[in-house]
Image 1 (cartoon, rainbow, N blue to C red):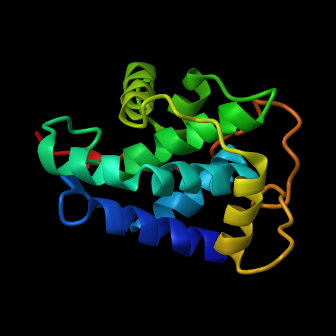
Image 2 (image 1 turned 90 degrees about the horizontal axis):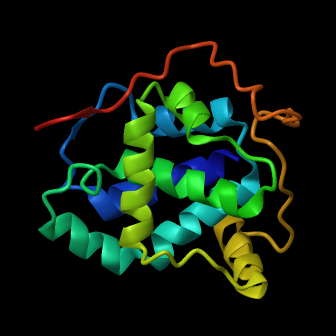
Length: 175
């Protein structure tokens, strides 16, 4: 899973640097690791989130260069939105935005805005052909078979089981 975290960091940095308007409190790698741990994100969800970012990279790069929207300029928030949407797409039982707000220490209204902003940015295009997704997964992991399981090895039985034990500091947006 650390390989996917490294690829996530590279994806965020390649799409958003040097356009980011955020102040880093923790490293992008630590942020992603903590977010994935708290949300008990599966390998498949992370792979789909990365697919959304990669597949829409041209739109994202254009928007990052031209927009004044601070959410679009923040790679971490757009990664979060991509992760939320991937989770909702793949899972029948998923977190509500209120729970994502608790996990990230952001307000529910901000979570809603981030999600809507990302969906508009990708033109609400969330469907991925299963064959393409399988090839994408193999490419990401560099192996023919990809095992998908929760990142910390715990199966999530309830969407209310996240219980953050350590504070994940929110990313500061500069005005």
